[in-house]
Image (cartoon, rainbow, N blue to C red; front, side, top):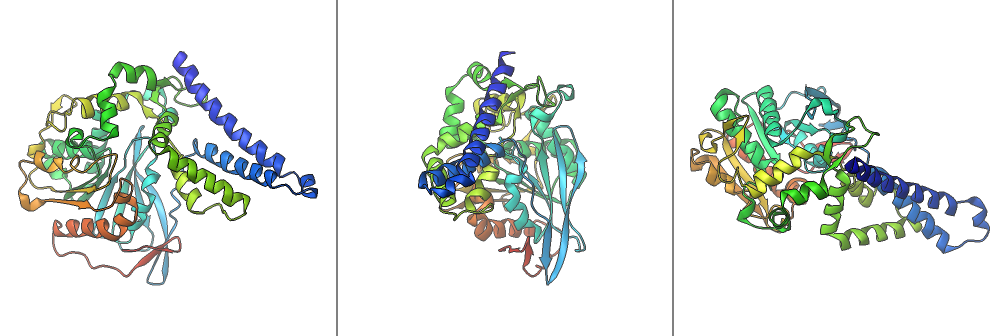
Length: 428
């Protein structure tokens, strides 16, 4: 019960800060104070506005916000369809109504690392112009009843296997960050168990296939702490407020604290600047600060067994890096991948999954000819930029599409004219 108590204490602290922000904003905005204008009251209201919004977003799953697509002067509605529904995650399809289906069928494997799949919203938008886009939508562990059982990295891998089978062999898979080693293992699993269901290409973006290839603060932490320390300090039990009451999780609020601590000074300055903008009435609901932090602060709990098995087997045990990963009692051999083209993408300034960690996948693909291997290191790009920033839009995305076309049957598909999503141009 002590773990449940600490979980509820964190939620109570979050709730209290949200309430304090709302109270400060309401009090400082009281009409009678306008009789005697005071800059301190404006700053108090601004602090309350920013504080309430920040702490409220921590428990809300962001909306995809992808509703329309404009191409050649014609508007198309986008319908998000659930193709496969499972307890811990669904397979979604962004269907563009009234548009001829694109020949490129892309599966985005989203990370389960504390944020929702909506973190890849801009990635989805940029690919919708040229592709039929599918994505893995992982669920918040606190909302999953204990009766649904466990979910560790083997279960994650088998989910990816099922999603690949559902989509068929003409799929092009793009795994972003954390799922890169598990998606590589899932592809190898299919190569042995169901070769006909293998995807056409596999692109791994900034993932820790071999964490020891280039140590970072993340890998150093994984090496430094023991599994007992992690289980004692990081794992808590979901409280009575949620459907997953009693489930052991790595809370999203703890993960968020880790994210922020890595760049605390920059985040503090960002919020101070935003308070100033609100006080001067220069801010808006959808300005750059709010667009970023509405997504960044929205966190989800991870199943405890998934978090602990990730650290123990991928970072400490290096099971994928040493080609010793076991799924459902079957030892996966990555060398069995012989006809799935594999590309790795890394950022030269990635401080989470440093250059060298992801490209290690190519050395593991011993059965794959060099003609089906490719790699790219994006200069000046950090972790976020290689899948969602300008580096992705301007440089990496065209290279990935070129790689997909080069390893597709038949001629590359004709490129449509530039389209728009939500009335904002998408740069190809």
